[in-house]
Structures are given as C-alpha cells and as structure tokens.
Image (cartoon, rainbow, N blue to C red; front, side, top):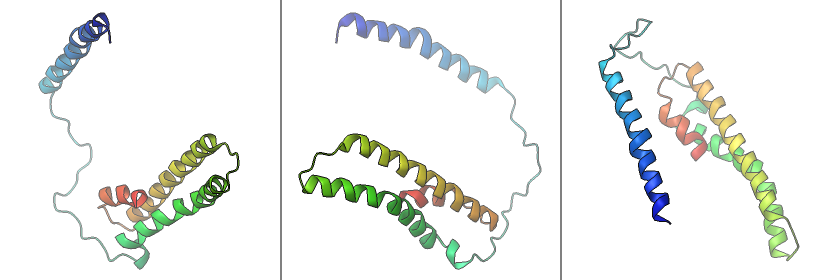
Length: 134
C-alpha cells in the first residue's frame, strides 16, 4: 500500500470522521433527557403460563428445522453432483440457496417472535436471536 494512500485515509479520518463524532457526542451530552410518551409500570407483569409449543426448546427446534428443510434438497443436489463428478454450477446455486436460507430464517424468527409477544411473553430478545440460530 502506498504511503500517499495511507496518508489520504488518515487525513479523511482525522479531518472528517473524528470531528463529526466529537461534535455529535458533544451535542448528545448537551441535549435534555428523552421522555417516554407513555406511562409504564416499573414492576414487570407476571408472564402467563405458555402453551407447550411456545417453550424455548420447542420454538428453537422449529426455528432450526424449517430453514434446514428448505435448504436440504438443494444441498443434496449439489453434493450428489460433486460426488458423481458431474459439471454443476455450484457457486451460483449456492448463492441462491444462501438467499433462500437467510429469507427463511428471517421469516421464521419474525413469526415465532410474533407468537411469543401475542402470548404476553415480553422476554423475547434472546429467544428471537436463538430461534433462527439453532
């Protein structure tokens, strides 16, 4: 990497990025505290008993099985073509399978998080992360 390129990046950092971050933090510290527009109770409500399909284990299993089922057939065709020494456009097909996997994981996470919130379970943060990550 040329010295002039590194020097240009350093000038951009200290000339643009750092002053903007410093001004933003200064302005943020000087602003008044944001007030919540709605009243809420500091004591959390008791979570009602959940149905069996809304337990963390079952929801994580469902969140892992459905994307796996959506991708398994495509990956089976790719692996069988590799093992049988057939010419196959693997990388284009793998990118399509990755897009299908990401879309399926996002949809499953949204639906299961919605079900959890509808059953008045407000502890949704970690389960929404673990649902598609399982």
